[in-house]
Amino acid sequence: MDALSELKRHLKPGQVYRRVDLEQWSTAVDRHLKQLVDEGTLQKMSQGLYYYPAKASFGSVPPEDEKLVRAFLKSDDFLLTSPNLYNSLGVGTTQLYNTRFVYNHKRHGQFVLGGKEFDFRLKHKFPRELSEEFLLVDLLNNLNELAEDRESVLRSVKEKVLKEPESQMKRAVNVYAGERTKTLFNQWMLEGNLAHV
Image (cartoon, rainbow, N blue to C red; front, side, top):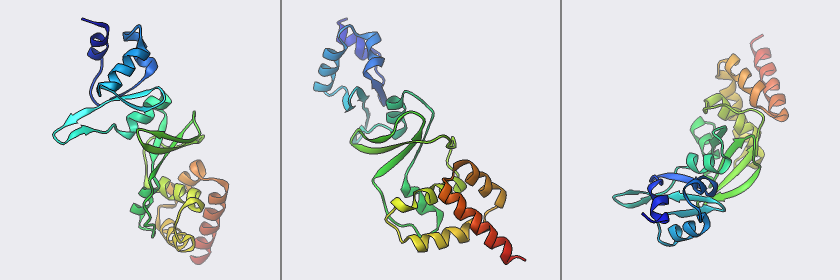
């Protein structure tokens, strides 16, 4: 078996590989990568990042965002989200965005991986999984970046926040909110409590 075939034997469809991952199976990794890309076995996603496409009846399946990000960061410690998810909260956001946020502890900046734009943001804390409370806090944290009617969204978020179980919202705000969001939330809580007096 030649060296290129030996390398191919280790590749699995649907997986994303870093150049460094493949060095263990090749003594001429750059030459082999060029050959594999040229023949269409691998697709180059970005510098040092390659995808072995899975095949479906309609053609090649693009890589999952999670696999791209995991290989890029060399870590499972991240949260992948999108401003499009705010539209599911019922607070009047309607815009569609072409970017994905990656909250993580390692990288910061805009990166294009596999033709998709990812906005890597360094965060001290983020949940393992998305929740409605986190998305509400995240929406407020990012409101100034969104192409929405801010006043209208703020009114709707305030209404929704005041209906949520206070303890869960408070926990999400304490852990994930920026200073501006914390101030806003505390003001709303105060107003809500005064309204009940």
